[in-house]
Length: 327
Image (tube, rainbow, N blue to C red; front, side, top):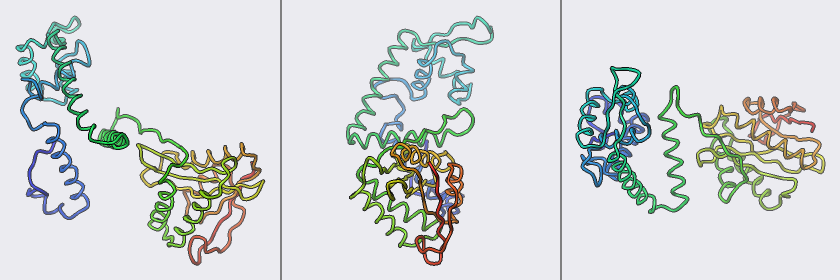
């Protein structure tokens, strides 16, 4: 928790980091910490509506999640100094909310649990906390609430790290919604320009492809998919008709932050599955030899390189490769 004041800090490292990307990120995290602690009242000494300190409230919460834990286990779970925890347990015992009994398996340890009064205290804490957080969420639309929860889950996963951390959230592959077509055009222009120096002609080509799809596509034989992770778009792909026998795979994209999850392979597999169901006999696609990751995905899926020739599709003086797959 960051309870510092001021903007960028004045410590020895502040000047060195202040103008760097890392310095800006550090300040963004600290700024959010200060904002959130003010919003939920963490700067106060007591739990809202209670005579419990914040630390005592946290101990009660952990004890409510288990029955018969030891001080050693509780100290490890909370990451709390054993001496400090011992003082907190003594205070809670004095308030009548904590029961301590000898461990039947280890005479050096005691087992901790909440008394009836302790469980009532926990119930009141939960009710107050739910009302407090509910008040924060009520000011947001339903979409805003979902976005907030998704962002918090992402932050929890990223900051958890290490052994025992939750596995990454699975991605969702779905049909596009309003706004997704523009996202495909924007991200193709931005990502391919940054990573492969594709020009604005490529972005214009993507826009033409997407506009034609929206206006004219046949849902029975043509489809577009969006990959979503933690509520954010992270990939796209499309299958369109070239003729009755041949389908064309287009606009494959996986965001840099979502690579390494097998998402590109999953998107291509979805295209192949749909092409077979739609009755096509072949899938074709065009790509640039620089796109080595995409080429590996195509090859693993069963595509083969059919031809390679100069083509300005991806920029002046570039080579375009045609890959095909028999179904």
